[in-house]
Amino acid sequence: MNYSVGGYGIDQAYRRLERIHDGSRFVLLGLDPNGIMDVVSQYDGWLGGDQVPFALKGRFVITPSGRLNWIGPPRLDADGFVALNQAPSGSLPESYFLPGTQDGAVISRFPYTLTLARVALMPSIRAFLAGHTEWSALYHADHSSGALQLMVAISEAFARLARARDQRPLIVILPVSGSFRENTTFDQFEYVALVNELRRRNIEVLDVGPAMAAASGGRLACGYFTRQDTGFAAWLRSPVPCGGHYSGRAHALVAQLVKAELLRRKMLVR
Image (tube, rainbow, N blue to C red):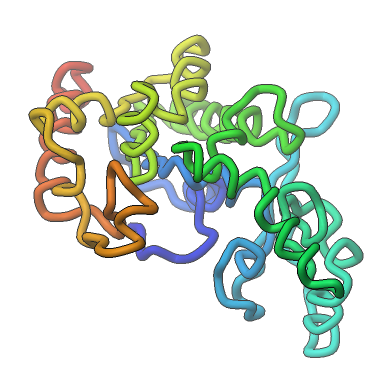
């Protein structure tokens, strides 16, 4: 189930699989491309979410030996939570997007014109204005966050655990509106490096993005989303001025694509 919980990415899904074994023949891992930001972050409050204690989470790191190591969220009282927001690196040293760092939130300081200049120079802002998603750079193998490698490692661990239970794993990539915007502008989805690496490692993956783009019949992909932007927001997000959750049309198409893939891979055969 995905109840749109902030910060809930494939790391949380994998940990849930570790705790639950229902005996099914196959298991699906739905991957939201912007979840690459969540796997390297421990606090959704630094990614635009509410700055509240339940926005804290754990994260995986890759050890020098290549293993996944889980770092749980800190246990903070009221004073500790205030300290976290005042001195982030002291409370969450393993979290990416720390305020004041290259990809983190800009800390407001006098003179404020320099603060505004720093905001304008943020890599995510420059990427968005160029037509990319704000997380596109995290899919680069040489990005300092190591996010791509972590996404691959978690997906691989998910698949390994499923196979150990005699289940067939399938990673399903579910592109968001920003993904379609990038594909429309650059003729390529931002997460293609992840798909290529998973396939190179013989991990079964279904990327519904190309089929969804083809099914739109040359029209904008906004029919796949519930929020249609207008005015300045529409201009800013052009050529795909929309967002939000998948629409009924998108859900129906994804269901058809997943069913066809399960049949093609003979995952529904007892």
